[in-house]
Length: 128
Image 1: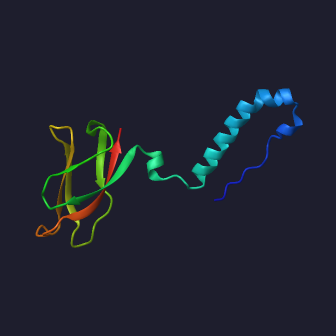
Image 2: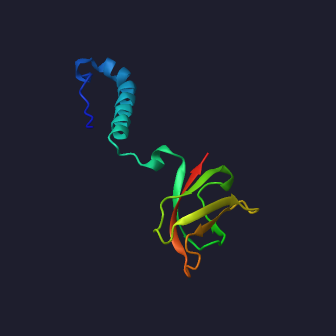
Image 3: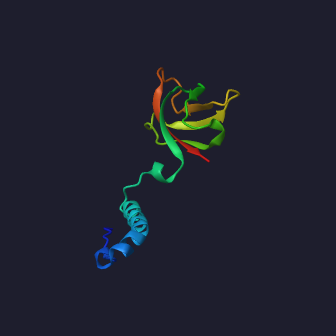
């Protein structure tokens, strides 16, 4: 869907005194319309609308990993792995918690537990 704006108000038809009085209102309206057009044009990302961050982490099967976060771990609502790595390395279970040092920890269990190296996983961290 394409959104277009039309000129609804022509300030040039006002006198200079009226223009000066209405300038803050016109600026506010123009800014609001610009933000609305941006929003409905699909230019906003998930992060623009939700209090979250996306982190990459190297995780090993059944090994606790500490994940650095931008915000306090106490404000975390959920941690979600964003995608299955592959059918052979699917995440079977995923546990996250806040440890005694107020750090986010995650413990994944992969379909193949004999994977010798860590697997790169993207995590969506949602904050309150």
